View 1: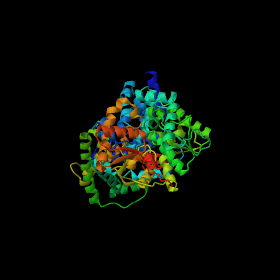
View 2 (view 1 turned 30 degrees about the vertical axis):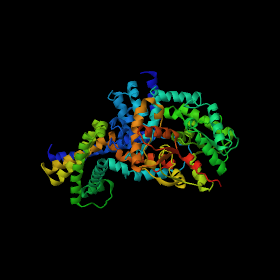
View 3 (view 1 turned 90 degrees about the vertical axis):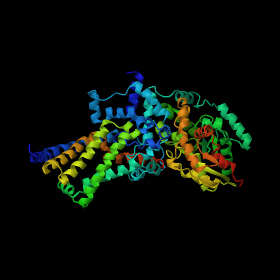
View 4 (view 1 turned 90 degrees about the horizontal axis):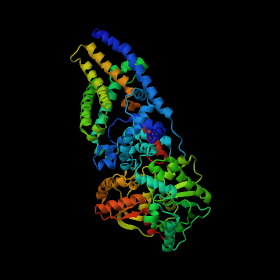
Length: 419
Length: 219
């Protein structure tokens, strides 16, 4: 047994808790999770059945934590998990799972499969079986501060552009601000309009805010790859910056996994509750709307639909806010079939977009979104995650569909009222 | 051993053995799970874990529309054979008498003809379920030998119960011995197989609903 396999099995054992043991005890192999997973529906390959993606973890549970399984293992009646097998499983645990959690919503015995995939990745990474793309992204996140290698000067350049475009001062390292804004590297590099959009909204709504020059990256590759120690280090940088600037709130931007990472995993990774609140930008915008501080002077007239980023809606609990905001800014907002907590993933979350090996599969998985869009035929598609946005744009282009993809925050900023 | 002696044995020592294995086995399995524990969640809650957990225990009995459309056979057949098995087990008058001897409580029974028809429907459904497991690419791929054992042990009490009630083929004491024996087999194997889901699904749904409920999601 190689050292890394030992570490992998050890990590599996560490990750198995009462919910995991319950879920494995309950599975009746009904296969209903398959039809909930876009990697199965769009390929028809039964190997992509969500519960099957956990098979090595299930065997470790059975062999280590069940009375019968321990005896079977002692008498050599059960098959040990091997290094080669974990190598084979990369394509299930990383390439064909975005941890979107749709399967967790349909399992009749209540298995939270996404919860288990997240845990299984800890063992996969410890065994040295994580995709190269994710290893590189995680390394850059730790050493440079961004999975895409975005450094402070790049952000500063985008801030200068945003200041020119909006005519507003973008606050950096402002002590005692109410809100500290995080950004994803994808936003900084591909969608910098987000910065001037929030600057204009916050100016109008009179929100005190800042960006930290020490911790501006919102995403967390440590979680995607499944190395809690590294994930904790990335969260700690945000905690340190928030505490240094003494802000009351940290804003997670338009990025699904970044929100889940800081909002739901963050305190658990660093081992203590935060002394600031974490809010998603859509939560804050909807709060401002409720308080009458966010008003629009015009509306989008084209037919809009909304793609729910999985980690914001299904896994994150922010479902009603984008709809309130869309109803404020759009005259013709229509829902796709199976929206909200039952929405279909774009196919690129959970590290899939960072994993080049999964590129072809990821675009195949997009076909599910294509079918949803064909059902409503929108003029434009609104979302709130720049990773989803890149995938949606690529998928739409690949399939010759002429539907622009808009950011919800930017759409609101474009219709802001002057008073 | 005469059929009458066999029946006595099945009703006596065999039933005691099966009951001990079932009760101790299920208790050990549940303890094994609960003793693994769960770390406290430090993220500030948006909703209630308890309410979310309890809600999902009930709500997960109703499939979402997409699942119903894409997997209508699984859903409908699943409902029928689970309901058939449960009603025949707990609402057939002779079973209630037997359970009264053990637990000391009575409850009303369902008409015998209804239970009889339900048993036939359940047997046919379970045969269709087996056919589906063998022919559906996902189910066939996922299935392990224990799934077929669990299927067999589930259908046997229904078949033997039907035969015993209608006194078909063999001497009545022998039919009754086979019926009780098939239930004992089910009880003995129960703690070691997926049949455990009859208990753990409540725990599983609770955890799922609680995890989601904390984040303000109705799972």
